[in-house]
Image (cartoon, rainbow over all chains, first blue to last red; front, top):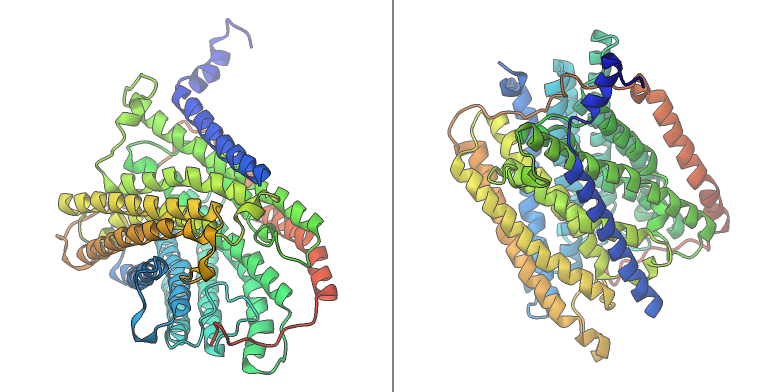
Length: 48
Length: 551
Protein backbone atom coordinates (compact mmCIF):
# COMPACT_ATOMS: atom_id res chain seq x y z
CA UNK A 1 0.00 0.00 0.00
CA UNK A 2 1.42 3.37 -1.01
CA UNK A 3 2.10 5.48 2.06
CA UNK A 4 1.38 8.77 0.40
CA UNK A 5 -2.04 7.80 -0.98
CA UNK A 6 -4.77 8.91 1.46
CA UNK A 7 -7.51 7.00 -0.43
CA UNK A 8 -5.68 3.75 0.09
CA UNK A 9 -4.94 4.50 3.71
CA UNK A 10 -8.56 5.08 4.55
CA UNK A 11 -9.64 1.44 5.00
CA UNK A 12 -6.76 0.58 7.30
CA UNK A 13 -7.57 3.59 9.46
CA UNK A 14 -11.18 2.41 9.72
CA UNK A 15 -10.18 -1.10 10.59
CA UNK A 16 -7.93 0.04 13.39
CA UNK A 17 -10.39 2.61 14.69
CA UNK A 18 -11.95 0.19 17.18
CA UNK A 19 -9.57 -0.82 19.93
CA UNK A 20 -10.28 -4.51 20.69
CA UNK A 21 -7.42 -5.18 23.10
CA UNK A 22 -9.84 -6.07 25.88
CA UNK A 23 -11.53 -8.58 23.59
CA UNK A 24 -8.17 -10.13 22.71
CA UNK A 25 -7.24 -10.57 26.36
CA UNK A 26 -10.73 -11.91 27.21
CA UNK A 27 -10.69 -14.59 24.51
CA UNK A 28 -7.17 -15.61 25.52
CA UNK A 29 -8.33 -16.02 29.15
CA UNK A 30 -11.28 -18.05 27.89
CA UNK A 31 -8.92 -20.30 25.94
CA UNK A 32 -6.69 -20.75 28.98
CA UNK A 33 -9.71 -21.70 31.11
CA UNK A 34 -10.74 -24.36 28.58
CA UNK A 35 -7.20 -25.77 28.48
CA UNK A 36 -6.89 -25.86 32.28
CA UNK A 37 -10.25 -27.62 32.62
CA UNK A 38 -9.41 -30.14 29.91
CA UNK A 39 -5.91 -30.95 31.12
CA UNK A 40 -7.12 -31.10 34.73
CA UNK A 41 -9.65 -33.78 33.83
CA UNK A 42 -7.10 -35.48 31.58
CA UNK A 43 -4.73 -35.77 34.55
CA UNK A 44 -7.56 -37.31 36.58
CA UNK A 45 -8.28 -39.71 33.72
CA UNK A 46 -4.62 -40.79 33.57
CA UNK A 47 -4.41 -41.16 37.35
CA UNK A 48 -7.22 -43.70 37.29
CA UNK B 1 -41.83 5.67 15.20
CA UNK B 2 -39.13 3.00 15.12
CA UNK B 3 -40.40 -0.47 14.29
CA UNK B 4 -38.98 -1.59 17.64
CA UNK B 5 -41.68 0.42 19.44
CA UNK B 6 -44.53 -0.50 17.12
CA UNK B 7 -46.76 -3.03 18.87
CA UNK B 8 -48.05 -6.15 17.12
CA UNK B 9 -51.72 -6.43 16.17
CA UNK B 10 -53.89 -8.01 18.86
CA UNK B 11 -54.28 -11.22 16.86
CA UNK B 12 -50.55 -11.56 16.43
CA UNK B 13 -49.76 -10.84 20.08
CA UNK B 14 -52.34 -13.39 21.17
CA UNK B 15 -50.60 -16.09 19.12
CA UNK B 16 -47.15 -15.40 20.54
CA UNK B 17 -48.49 -15.07 24.10
CA UNK B 18 -50.26 -18.44 23.82
CA UNK B 19 -46.83 -20.05 23.49
CA UNK B 20 -45.56 -18.04 26.47
CA UNK B 21 -48.42 -19.17 28.74
CA UNK B 22 -47.62 -22.83 28.07
CA UNK B 23 -43.92 -22.07 28.61
CA UNK B 24 -44.35 -20.66 32.11
CA UNK B 25 -46.96 -23.22 33.19
CA UNK B 26 -44.41 -25.87 32.18
CA UNK B 27 -41.67 -24.12 34.10
CA UNK B 28 -43.70 -24.25 37.30
CA UNK B 29 -44.69 -27.92 36.96
CA UNK B 30 -41.28 -29.10 35.73
CA UNK B 31 -39.47 -27.06 38.36
CA UNK B 32 -41.56 -28.53 41.17
CA UNK B 33 -40.64 -32.02 39.97
CA UNK B 34 -36.97 -31.01 39.95
CA UNK B 35 -37.22 -29.81 43.54
CA UNK B 36 -38.84 -33.07 44.66
CA UNK B 37 -36.14 -35.09 42.89
CA UNK B 38 -33.31 -33.31 44.68
CA UNK B 39 -35.14 -33.79 48.00
CA UNK B 40 -35.57 -37.51 47.39
CA UNK B 41 -31.93 -37.90 46.37
CA UNK B 42 -30.84 -36.21 49.60
CA UNK B 43 -32.12 -39.29 51.41
CA UNK B 44 -34.08 -37.15 53.86
CA UNK B 45 -37.43 -37.18 52.12
CA UNK B 46 -39.80 -39.85 50.85
CA UNK B 47 -42.44 -39.15 48.24
CA UNK B 48 -46.01 -39.29 49.59
CA UNK B 49 -48.98 -41.22 48.16
CA UNK B 50 -46.73 -43.86 46.61
CA UNK B 51 -45.56 -41.47 43.89
CA UNK B 52 -42.76 -43.03 41.90
CA UNK B 53 -39.43 -41.16 41.65
CA UNK B 54 -39.08 -42.10 37.98
CA UNK B 55 -42.48 -40.62 37.18
CA UNK B 56 -41.22 -37.31 38.57
CA UNK B 57 -37.96 -37.64 36.69
CA UNK B 58 -39.80 -38.25 33.41
CA UNK B 59 -42.15 -35.31 33.98
CA UNK B 60 -39.16 -33.07 34.79
CA UNK B 61 -37.22 -34.05 31.67
CA UNK B 62 -40.13 -34.03 29.23
CA UNK B 63 -41.83 -30.88 30.54
CA UNK B 64 -38.66 -28.79 30.84
CA UNK B 65 -36.43 -30.34 28.19
CA UNK B 66 -39.04 -30.69 25.49
CA UNK B 67 -42.15 -28.65 26.30
CA UNK B 68 -40.86 -25.52 28.10
CA UNK B 69 -38.05 -25.07 25.58
CA UNK B 70 -39.97 -25.87 22.40
CA UNK B 71 -42.94 -23.64 23.25
CA UNK B 72 -40.73 -20.73 24.26
CA UNK B 73 -38.52 -21.11 21.19
CA UNK B 74 -41.37 -21.33 18.70
CA UNK B 75 -43.26 -18.44 20.33
CA UNK B 76 -40.13 -16.25 20.46
CA UNK B 77 -39.04 -17.17 16.94
CA UNK B 78 -42.53 -16.49 15.57
CA UNK B 79 -42.41 -13.04 17.14
CA UNK B 80 -38.99 -12.43 15.55
CA UNK B 81 -40.38 -13.43 12.16
CA UNK B 82 -43.48 -11.28 12.69
CA UNK B 83 -41.32 -8.30 13.57
CA UNK B 84 -38.73 -8.66 10.82
CA UNK B 85 -40.52 -10.17 7.81
CA UNK B 86 -44.20 -10.03 8.79
CA UNK B 87 -46.92 -12.68 8.98
CA UNK B 88 -50.01 -13.02 6.79
CA UNK B 89 -53.44 -14.04 8.11
CA UNK B 90 -53.09 -17.44 6.49
CA UNK B 91 -49.66 -17.97 8.05
CA UNK B 92 -50.99 -16.88 11.43
CA UNK B 93 -53.79 -19.43 11.20
CA UNK B 94 -51.28 -22.14 10.29
CA UNK B 95 -49.16 -21.10 13.29
CA UNK B 96 -52.25 -21.48 15.52
CA UNK B 97 -52.75 -24.96 14.09
CA UNK B 98 -49.14 -25.73 15.03
CA UNK B 99 -49.80 -24.46 18.56
CA UNK B 100 -52.91 -26.57 19.09
CA UNK B 101 -51.37 -29.75 17.70
CA UNK B 102 -48.33 -29.24 19.95
CA UNK B 103 -50.56 -28.57 22.94
CA UNK B 104 -52.72 -31.65 22.35
CA UNK B 105 -49.54 -33.74 22.01
CA UNK B 106 -48.13 -32.26 25.20
CA UNK B 107 -51.33 -32.97 27.12
CA UNK B 108 -51.41 -36.58 25.88
CA UNK B 109 -47.79 -37.23 26.84
CA UNK B 110 -48.09 -35.38 30.16
CA UNK B 111 -51.23 -37.22 31.30
CA UNK B 112 -49.71 -40.56 30.31
CA UNK B 113 -46.62 -39.84 32.39
CA UNK B 114 -48.58 -38.46 35.36
CA UNK B 115 -50.76 -41.58 35.63
CA UNK B 116 -47.57 -43.64 35.79
CA UNK B 117 -47.86 -45.17 32.33
CA UNK B 118 -44.67 -43.68 30.90
CA UNK B 119 -41.90 -43.62 33.51
CA UNK B 120 -39.30 -43.98 30.79
CA UNK B 121 -37.41 -40.68 31.25
CA UNK B 122 -37.23 -38.11 28.50
CA UNK B 123 -34.82 -40.26 26.48
CA UNK B 124 -37.39 -43.14 26.50
CA UNK B 125 -34.65 -45.71 25.91
CA UNK B 126 -35.90 -49.10 24.75
CA UNK B 127 -36.53 -51.69 26.03
CA UNK B 128 -38.35 -49.64 28.69
CA UNK B 129 -41.90 -49.43 27.41
CA UNK B 130 -44.40 -46.62 27.85
CA UNK B 131 -48.09 -46.57 26.96
CA UNK B 132 -48.55 -45.82 23.21
CA UNK B 133 -50.24 -42.50 24.10
CA UNK B 134 -46.86 -41.20 25.28
CA UNK B 135 -45.20 -41.83 21.93
CA UNK B 136 -48.22 -40.61 19.97
CA UNK B 137 -48.29 -37.43 22.08
CA UNK B 138 -44.60 -36.79 21.35
CA UNK B 139 -45.30 -37.31 17.65
CA UNK B 140 -48.00 -34.63 17.81
CA UNK B 141 -45.56 -32.19 19.43
CA UNK B 142 -43.04 -32.81 16.64
CA UNK B 143 -45.62 -32.59 13.85
CA UNK B 144 -46.91 -29.30 15.31
CA UNK B 145 -43.37 -27.93 15.39
CA UNK B 146 -42.93 -28.93 11.73
CA UNK B 147 -45.96 -26.84 10.80
CA UNK B 148 -44.40 -23.94 12.71
CA UNK B 149 -41.14 -24.51 10.81
CA UNK B 150 -42.84 -24.44 7.41
CA UNK B 151 -44.73 -21.28 8.34
CA UNK B 152 -41.35 -19.66 9.11
CA UNK B 153 -39.87 -20.88 5.81
CA UNK B 154 -42.87 -19.48 3.95
CA UNK B 155 -42.61 -16.13 5.78
CA UNK B 156 -39.01 -15.61 4.68
CA UNK B 157 -39.78 -16.84 1.13
CA UNK B 158 -42.62 -14.34 0.74
CA UNK B 159 -40.42 -11.53 2.11
CA UNK B 160 -37.55 -12.41 -0.22
CA UNK B 161 -39.91 -12.37 -3.21
CA UNK B 162 -41.09 -8.90 -2.27
CA UNK B 163 -37.53 -7.65 -1.59
CA UNK B 164 -35.58 -9.02 -4.53
CA UNK B 165 -31.82 -8.69 -4.16
CA UNK B 166 -32.02 -7.54 -0.54
CA UNK B 167 -30.29 -9.30 2.32
CA UNK B 168 -32.78 -11.08 4.59
CA UNK B 169 -33.08 -9.65 8.11
CA UNK B 170 -30.46 -11.29 10.34
CA UNK B 171 -32.95 -12.61 12.91
CA UNK B 172 -35.21 -14.11 10.22
CA UNK B 173 -32.17 -15.80 8.71
CA UNK B 174 -31.25 -17.24 12.11
CA UNK B 175 -34.78 -18.51 12.79
CA UNK B 176 -34.86 -20.30 9.44
CA UNK B 177 -31.45 -21.92 10.12
CA UNK B 178 -32.69 -23.17 13.48
CA UNK B 179 -35.91 -24.57 12.03
CA UNK B 180 -34.10 -26.28 9.14
CA UNK B 181 -31.83 -27.92 11.70
CA UNK B 182 -34.85 -28.89 13.83
CA UNK B 183 -36.69 -30.37 10.86
CA UNK B 184 -33.72 -32.46 9.69
CA UNK B 185 -33.02 -33.62 13.25
CA UNK B 186 -36.59 -34.55 14.15
CA UNK B 187 -36.78 -36.82 11.10
CA UNK B 188 -34.65 -39.24 13.14
CA UNK B 189 -36.99 -38.96 16.12
CA UNK B 190 -40.03 -39.45 13.90
CA UNK B 191 -38.42 -42.51 12.32
CA UNK B 192 -37.74 -44.28 15.62
CA UNK B 193 -41.06 -43.33 17.21
CA UNK B 194 -43.29 -44.15 14.24
CA UNK B 195 -41.46 -47.16 12.81
CA UNK B 196 -40.11 -48.71 16.02
CA UNK B 197 -41.77 -47.53 19.25
CA UNK B 198 -45.44 -47.14 18.36
CA UNK B 199 -45.90 -50.58 16.69
CA UNK B 200 -43.86 -52.20 19.50
CA UNK B 201 -45.77 -50.50 22.30
CA UNK B 202 -49.08 -51.41 20.65
CA UNK B 203 -47.97 -55.04 20.48
CA UNK B 204 -47.85 -55.24 16.67
CA UNK B 205 -44.10 -55.77 16.74
CA UNK B 206 -42.77 -58.29 19.21
CA UNK B 207 -39.25 -56.90 19.58
CA UNK B 208 -37.37 -53.64 19.07
CA UNK B 209 -33.83 -53.02 17.79
CA UNK B 210 -32.50 -51.23 20.87
CA UNK B 211 -29.25 -50.01 19.35
CA UNK B 212 -30.98 -48.59 16.29
CA UNK B 213 -33.54 -46.78 18.45
CA UNK B 214 -30.85 -45.22 20.64
CA UNK B 215 -28.80 -44.18 17.62
CA UNK B 216 -31.82 -42.54 15.99
CA UNK B 217 -32.65 -40.83 19.30
CA UNK B 218 -29.17 -39.31 19.54
CA UNK B 219 -29.19 -38.35 15.88
CA UNK B 220 -32.00 -36.09 17.13
CA UNK B 221 -30.73 -35.56 20.67
CA UNK B 222 -27.62 -33.55 19.95
CA UNK B 223 -29.12 -31.05 17.50
CA UNK B 224 -31.89 -30.73 20.11
CA UNK B 225 -29.25 -29.12 22.33
CA UNK B 226 -28.47 -26.60 19.59
CA UNK B 227 -32.17 -26.03 18.94
CA UNK B 228 -32.27 -24.80 22.55
CA UNK B 229 -29.08 -22.82 22.25
CA UNK B 230 -29.51 -21.00 18.93
CA UNK B 231 -32.45 -18.82 20.05
CA UNK B 232 -30.24 -17.68 22.94
CA UNK B 233 -27.53 -16.90 20.39
CA UNK B 234 -30.09 -14.93 18.36
CA UNK B 235 -30.62 -12.71 21.39
CA UNK B 236 -26.88 -12.44 22.05
CA UNK B 237 -25.99 -11.49 18.47
CA UNK B 238 -28.88 -9.25 17.52
CA UNK B 239 -30.82 -8.14 20.63
CA UNK B 240 -28.23 -7.59 23.39
CA UNK B 241 -26.23 -5.04 21.29
CA UNK B 242 -29.33 -2.86 21.19
CA UNK B 243 -29.90 -3.17 24.95
CA UNK B 244 -26.33 -2.07 25.70
CA UNK B 245 -26.57 0.84 23.25
CA UNK B 246 -24.29 -0.70 20.63
CA UNK B 247 -24.49 -2.17 17.15
CA UNK B 248 -24.24 -5.66 15.67
CA UNK B 249 -20.52 -6.42 15.59
CA UNK B 250 -20.59 -8.37 12.33
CA UNK B 251 -23.63 -9.54 10.40
CA UNK B 252 -21.48 -11.86 8.27
CA UNK B 253 -19.80 -13.47 11.28
CA UNK B 254 -23.18 -14.13 12.91
CA UNK B 255 -24.57 -15.71 9.74
CA UNK B 256 -21.47 -17.83 9.20
CA UNK B 257 -21.60 -19.05 12.82
CA UNK B 258 -25.22 -20.13 12.37
CA UNK B 259 -24.41 -21.91 9.10
CA UNK B 260 -21.59 -23.80 10.85
CA UNK B 261 -24.01 -24.76 13.66
CA UNK B 262 -26.42 -26.10 11.04
CA UNK B 263 -23.69 -28.18 9.41
CA UNK B 264 -21.99 -29.53 12.53
CA UNK B 265 -24.82 -29.99 15.04
CA UNK B 266 -26.34 -33.06 13.44
CA UNK B 267 -23.66 -35.55 12.28
CA UNK B 268 -22.33 -35.83 15.84
CA UNK B 269 -24.90 -37.84 17.83
CA UNK B 270 -22.56 -40.80 18.34
CA UNK B 271 -20.60 -38.77 20.90
CA UNK B 272 -23.52 -39.50 23.25
CA UNK B 273 -22.94 -43.21 22.62
CA UNK B 274 -19.20 -43.45 23.13
CA UNK B 275 -19.60 -46.32 25.61
CA UNK B 276 -22.27 -48.03 23.51
CA UNK B 277 -21.27 -51.51 22.32
CA UNK B 278 -22.10 -52.44 18.74
CA UNK B 279 -20.95 -49.25 17.02
CA UNK B 280 -17.64 -49.25 15.16
CA UNK B 281 -15.14 -47.11 17.15
CA UNK B 282 -13.86 -45.55 13.90
CA UNK B 283 -17.23 -43.92 13.30
CA UNK B 284 -17.45 -42.81 16.90
CA UNK B 285 -14.05 -41.17 16.43
CA UNK B 286 -15.09 -39.49 13.18
CA UNK B 287 -18.15 -38.05 14.91
CA UNK B 288 -15.97 -36.87 17.81
CA UNK B 289 -13.90 -34.90 15.26
CA UNK B 290 -17.09 -33.44 13.76
CA UNK B 291 -18.24 -32.56 17.28
CA UNK B 292 -15.05 -30.60 17.83
CA UNK B 293 -15.88 -28.59 14.71
CA UNK B 294 -18.78 -27.08 16.68
CA UNK B 295 -16.21 -25.42 18.90
CA UNK B 296 -15.37 -23.07 16.01
CA UNK B 297 -18.72 -21.25 15.80
CA UNK B 298 -18.95 -21.31 19.61
CA UNK B 299 -15.63 -19.50 19.93
CA UNK B 300 -16.62 -17.14 17.08
CA UNK B 301 -19.67 -16.28 19.18
CA UNK B 302 -17.57 -15.65 22.30
CA UNK B 303 -15.22 -13.37 20.34
CA UNK B 304 -18.11 -11.52 18.75
CA UNK B 305 -19.78 -10.89 22.10
CA UNK B 306 -16.66 -9.52 23.78
CA UNK B 307 -16.09 -7.35 20.71
CA UNK B 308 -19.70 -6.10 20.76
CA UNK B 309 -19.32 -5.05 24.39
CA UNK B 310 -15.92 -3.45 23.87
CA UNK B 311 -16.89 -1.65 20.65
CA UNK B 312 -20.01 -0.22 22.31
CA UNK B 313 -17.97 0.94 25.33
CA UNK B 314 -15.20 2.48 23.22
CA UNK B 315 -17.77 4.45 21.23
CA UNK B 316 -19.08 5.85 24.50
CA UNK B 317 -15.55 7.11 25.20
CA UNK B 318 -14.07 4.53 27.57
CA UNK B 319 -10.38 4.25 26.79
CA UNK B 320 -8.91 2.06 29.53
CA UNK B 321 -8.35 -1.64 28.88
CA UNK B 322 -11.51 -2.87 30.67
CA UNK B 323 -13.30 0.43 31.40
CA UNK B 324 -15.99 -0.53 28.87
CA UNK B 325 -16.75 -3.65 30.90
CA UNK B 326 -17.52 -1.75 34.09
CA UNK B 327 -19.99 0.49 32.32
CA UNK B 328 -22.18 -2.24 30.85
CA UNK B 329 -25.84 -1.83 31.97
CA UNK B 330 -25.58 -4.10 35.00
CA UNK B 331 -28.81 -2.76 36.50
CA UNK B 332 -30.87 -3.70 33.44
CA UNK B 333 -32.16 -7.25 33.86
CA UNK B 334 -32.70 -7.53 30.09
CA UNK B 335 -28.90 -7.50 29.90
CA UNK B 336 -27.86 -8.99 33.25
CA UNK B 337 -29.79 -12.27 33.03
CA UNK B 338 -28.48 -13.19 29.54
CA UNK B 339 -25.00 -12.03 30.54
CA UNK B 340 -24.92 -14.49 33.45
CA UNK B 341 -26.09 -17.06 30.91
CA UNK B 342 -23.09 -16.21 28.71
CA UNK B 343 -20.73 -16.59 31.66
CA UNK B 344 -22.22 -19.97 32.54
CA UNK B 345 -21.49 -21.12 29.01
CA UNK B 346 -17.75 -20.84 29.66
CA UNK B 347 -17.62 -23.75 32.16
CA UNK B 348 -20.56 -25.33 30.29
CA UNK B 349 -18.70 -25.31 26.98
CA UNK B 350 -15.44 -26.45 28.57
CA UNK B 351 -17.34 -29.35 30.16
CA UNK B 352 -18.86 -30.18 26.77
CA UNK B 353 -15.40 -30.51 25.22
CA UNK B 354 -14.43 -32.87 28.05
CA UNK B 355 -17.58 -34.97 27.59
CA UNK B 356 -16.99 -35.32 23.86
CA UNK B 357 -13.32 -36.27 24.22
CA UNK B 358 -13.47 -39.94 23.30
CA UNK B 359 -11.44 -41.58 26.08
CA UNK B 360 -12.17 -38.99 28.77
CA UNK B 361 -15.87 -39.61 28.28
CA UNK B 362 -15.32 -42.79 30.31
CA UNK B 363 -14.59 -40.56 33.30
CA UNK B 364 -17.97 -38.91 33.24
CA UNK B 365 -20.34 -41.14 31.25
CA UNK B 366 -23.56 -41.98 33.11
CA UNK B 367 -22.39 -39.98 36.12
CA UNK B 368 -24.21 -36.99 37.55
CA UNK B 369 -21.43 -34.80 36.11
CA UNK B 370 -23.46 -34.93 32.87
CA UNK B 371 -26.59 -33.74 34.68
CA UNK B 372 -24.51 -30.91 36.17
CA UNK B 373 -23.22 -30.10 32.67
CA UNK B 374 -26.59 -29.68 31.02
CA UNK B 375 -27.94 -27.75 33.97
CA UNK B 376 -25.20 -25.23 33.17
CA UNK B 377 -25.73 -25.15 29.42
CA UNK B 378 -29.49 -25.49 29.13
CA UNK B 379 -30.81 -24.63 32.57
CA UNK B 380 -28.53 -21.64 33.04
CA UNK B 381 -27.19 -20.33 29.72
CA UNK B 382 -30.36 -20.93 27.72
CA UNK B 383 -32.89 -20.44 30.49
CA UNK B 384 -31.43 -17.18 31.86
CA UNK B 385 -31.31 -15.83 28.30
CA UNK B 386 -34.95 -16.86 27.81
CA UNK B 387 -35.81 -15.05 31.05
CA UNK B 388 -33.89 -12.01 29.78
CA UNK B 389 -35.98 -12.10 26.61
CA UNK B 390 -39.21 -12.52 28.60
CA UNK B 391 -38.61 -9.19 30.41
CA UNK B 392 -39.13 -7.23 27.19
CA UNK B 393 -41.02 -9.66 24.94
CA UNK B 394 -43.99 -10.30 27.23
CA UNK B 395 -44.69 -6.59 28.03
CA UNK B 396 -44.24 -5.77 24.33
CA UNK B 397 -46.89 -8.39 23.52
CA UNK B 398 -49.30 -7.37 26.27
CA UNK B 399 -48.87 -3.60 25.83
CA UNK B 400 -47.40 -3.19 29.30
CA UNK B 401 -44.11 -2.00 30.79
CA UNK B 402 -41.27 -3.56 32.70
CA UNK B 403 -41.40 -1.29 35.72
CA UNK B 404 -38.26 -0.46 37.78
CA UNK B 405 -39.72 -2.62 40.56
CA UNK B 406 -40.15 -5.64 38.28
CA UNK B 407 -36.69 -4.99 36.83
CA UNK B 408 -35.27 -5.11 40.36
CA UNK B 409 -37.18 -8.29 41.12
CA UNK B 410 -35.77 -9.72 37.90
CA UNK B 411 -32.24 -8.92 39.05
CA UNK B 412 -32.93 -10.68 42.36
CA UNK B 413 -34.33 -13.62 40.38
CA UNK B 414 -31.16 -13.81 38.26
CA UNK B 415 -28.97 -13.86 41.37
CA UNK B 416 -31.15 -16.45 43.12
CA UNK B 417 -30.94 -18.64 40.01
CA UNK B 418 -27.17 -18.21 39.79
CA UNK B 419 -26.65 -19.09 43.45
CA UNK B 420 -28.98 -22.11 43.33
CA UNK B 421 -27.43 -23.41 40.14
CA UNK B 422 -23.86 -22.83 41.31
CA UNK B 423 -24.56 -24.99 44.37
CA UNK B 424 -26.59 -27.64 42.55
CA UNK B 425 -24.61 -27.93 39.32
CA UNK B 426 -21.28 -27.54 41.11
CA UNK B 427 -22.00 -30.39 43.49
CA UNK B 428 -23.29 -32.52 40.61
CA UNK B 429 -20.02 -32.01 38.74
CA UNK B 430 -17.91 -33.01 41.77
CA UNK B 431 -20.10 -35.96 42.73
CA UNK B 432 -19.92 -37.16 39.14
CA UNK B 433 -16.15 -37.15 39.21
CA UNK B 434 -16.17 -39.37 42.30
CA UNK B 435 -18.49 -41.81 40.57
CA UNK B 436 -22.00 -40.69 41.59
CA UNK B 437 -24.53 -42.05 39.10
CA UNK B 438 -27.13 -39.96 37.29
CA UNK B 439 -30.84 -40.81 36.82
CA UNK B 440 -31.19 -43.18 39.80
CA UNK B 441 -33.26 -42.56 42.90
CA UNK B 442 -31.69 -42.41 46.37
CA UNK B 443 -29.87 -45.57 47.37
CA UNK B 444 -27.11 -46.50 49.76
CA UNK B 445 -26.09 -49.28 47.39
CA UNK B 446 -25.71 -51.74 50.28
CA UNK B 447 -23.38 -49.40 52.14
CA UNK B 448 -20.43 -49.14 49.76
CA UNK B 449 -17.52 -47.03 50.93
CA UNK B 450 -17.55 -44.85 47.83
CA UNK B 451 -21.26 -44.20 48.26
CA UNK B 452 -20.66 -42.46 51.59
CA UNK B 453 -18.62 -39.80 49.75
CA UNK B 454 -21.63 -38.84 47.63
CA UNK B 455 -24.13 -38.06 50.37
CA UNK B 456 -23.03 -34.52 51.21
CA UNK B 457 -23.09 -33.57 47.55
CA UNK B 458 -26.63 -34.90 47.28
CA UNK B 459 -27.59 -32.77 50.25
CA UNK B 460 -26.01 -29.75 48.53
CA UNK B 461 -28.08 -30.52 45.43
CA UNK B 462 -31.23 -30.42 47.54
CA UNK B 463 -30.19 -27.01 48.92
CA UNK B 464 -29.44 -25.74 45.39
CA UNK B 465 -32.69 -27.23 44.07
CA UNK B 466 -34.67 -25.47 46.79
CA UNK B 467 -33.08 -22.11 45.97
CA UNK B 468 -33.77 -22.71 42.27
CA UNK B 469 -37.42 -23.41 43.00
CA UNK B 470 -37.64 -20.06 44.80
CA UNK B 471 -36.20 -18.60 41.58
CA UNK B 472 -38.94 -20.31 39.58
CA UNK B 473 -41.68 -18.92 41.81
CA UNK B 474 -40.20 -15.43 41.40
CA UNK B 475 -40.03 -15.82 37.63
CA UNK B 476 -43.60 -17.08 37.33
CA UNK B 477 -44.73 -14.14 39.52
CA UNK B 478 -42.91 -11.69 37.22
CA UNK B 479 -44.43 -13.35 34.17
CA UNK B 480 -47.94 -13.02 35.61
CA UNK B 481 -47.28 -9.37 36.45
CA UNK B 482 -45.98 -8.63 32.94
CA UNK B 483 -48.89 -10.49 31.36
CA UNK B 484 -51.82 -9.07 33.35
CA UNK B 485 -50.98 -6.40 35.91
CA UNK B 486 -48.01 -4.21 34.97
CA UNK B 487 -48.92 -0.64 33.95
CA UNK B 488 -49.96 -0.08 30.34
CA UNK B 489 -47.30 1.26 28.00
CA UNK B 490 -44.96 0.39 25.18
CA UNK B 491 -41.89 -1.74 25.84
CA UNK B 492 -39.24 -1.80 23.14
CA UNK B 493 -38.66 -4.91 20.99
CA UNK B 494 -34.92 -4.32 20.94
CA UNK B 495 -33.52 -5.32 17.56
CA UNK B 496 -30.00 -4.01 16.98
CA UNK B 497 -28.84 -2.33 13.77
CA UNK B 498 -25.64 -2.78 11.86
CA UNK B 499 -22.99 -0.06 11.77
CA UNK B 500 -23.77 2.46 9.05
CA UNK B 501 -20.46 1.75 7.36
CA UNK B 502 -20.62 -2.04 7.86
CA UNK B 503 -19.28 -4.08 5.00
CA UNK B 504 -21.86 -5.83 2.86
CA UNK B 505 -22.43 -9.48 3.80
CA UNK B 506 -21.36 -11.85 1.03
CA UNK B 507 -24.33 -13.19 -0.94
CA UNK B 508 -23.11 -16.75 -0.62
CA UNK B 509 -24.17 -16.70 3.04
CA UNK B 510 -27.77 -16.87 1.83
CA UNK B 511 -27.20 -19.71 -0.58
CA UNK B 512 -29.59 -22.07 1.15
CA UNK B 513 -29.17 -24.89 -1.41
CA UNK B 514 -25.43 -24.96 -0.77
CA UNK B 515 -25.60 -25.05 3.04
CA UNK B 516 -28.41 -27.60 3.16
CA UNK B 517 -26.58 -29.77 0.61
CA UNK B 518 -23.39 -29.71 2.70
CA UNK B 519 -25.40 -30.49 5.84
CA UNK B 520 -27.06 -33.51 4.20
CA UNK B 521 -23.74 -34.66 2.74
CA UNK B 522 -22.12 -34.54 6.20
CA UNK B 523 -25.01 -36.48 7.74
CA UNK B 524 -24.81 -39.13 5.02
CA UNK B 525 -21.05 -39.36 5.48
CA UNK B 526 -21.23 -39.67 9.27
CA UNK B 527 -24.23 -41.98 9.57
CA UNK B 528 -24.66 -44.16 6.46
CA UNK B 529 -22.06 -46.85 7.24
CA UNK B 530 -22.66 -47.04 11.04
CA UNK B 531 -26.44 -47.21 10.47
CA UNK B 532 -26.01 -49.92 7.89
CA UNK B 533 -23.77 -51.82 10.31
CA UNK B 534 -26.27 -51.44 13.13
CA UNK B 535 -29.14 -52.72 11.03
CA UNK B 536 -27.16 -55.68 9.70
CA UNK B 537 -25.27 -56.79 12.78
CA UNK B 538 -27.44 -55.89 15.76
CA UNK B 539 -28.17 -58.57 18.33
CA UNK B 540 -31.74 -59.90 18.40
CA UNK B 541 -34.35 -57.27 19.27
CA UNK B 542 -35.77 -56.93 22.74
CA UNK B 543 -39.25 -57.62 24.06
CA UNK B 544 -40.72 -54.74 26.09
CA UNK B 545 -39.89 -54.24 29.77
CA UNK B 546 -42.49 -52.59 31.99
CA UNK B 547 -40.46 -53.19 35.15
CA UNK B 548 -38.62 -51.88 37.23
CA UNK B 549 -39.60 -48.63 35.51
CA UNK B 550 -41.71 -48.11 32.44
CA UNK B 551 -45.43 -48.75 32.89
